[in-house]
Length: 236
Ligand SMILES: *C/C=C(C)/C=C/C=C(C)/C=C/C1=C(C)CCCC1(C)C
Image (cartoon, protein in one colour):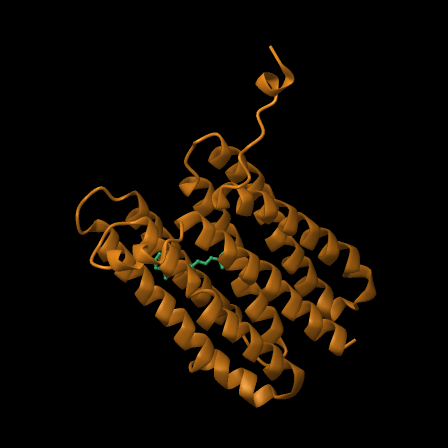
């Protein structure tokens, strides 16, 4: 038996394996960055930076397992959704923390969290559905919850609070809103690639669902955290 029989190295020319490896390392590095920067901020910003680090850290651990599952031919769906169910509500917490001084309440926070849980749970049911119309119908429900979140942030009460606060709060809110409107829109694309429905024409773009989700996670988890970091630095 040769050494290559004992140690199997995943085929990294495969984009799924490659982005799972890269994602694991990027999330780990981002977590170290956020955690190690904590001391340079005063208490007003420290919780926000801590939450940024928690989001990428939780993702790093899940990516470690998803990479393992993917490279050994297993399924990543459950690990993916467990990750999202923890990290997406934490992103809602980031919105709340940024707007807290401007008057955001825990009621606003719980509305955001509930809507995000509806979006994710219905999305999960759609991904594991084995009926012909299941993925399209669950996906529609998930999409409606997504639009509701986008509305709350862009036009609803949270937008009004941000506009009234002005200055760096409004600026940070605007940037985070762009992530929800553009960055989060990457996920339904992955879903349409990975499930069957009227939208199967998107399969033609030749991407894989996991690759799309991995790109989305890198942009949204690390990018979102960096926006919060930049807001904290500018206000120090
Ligand atoms: C860090 C993880 C994040 C920011 C995950 C976000 C996930 C979504 C915005 C997922 C949305 C979906 C839809 C809008 C419809 C289809 C089903 C989902 C769950 C993929």
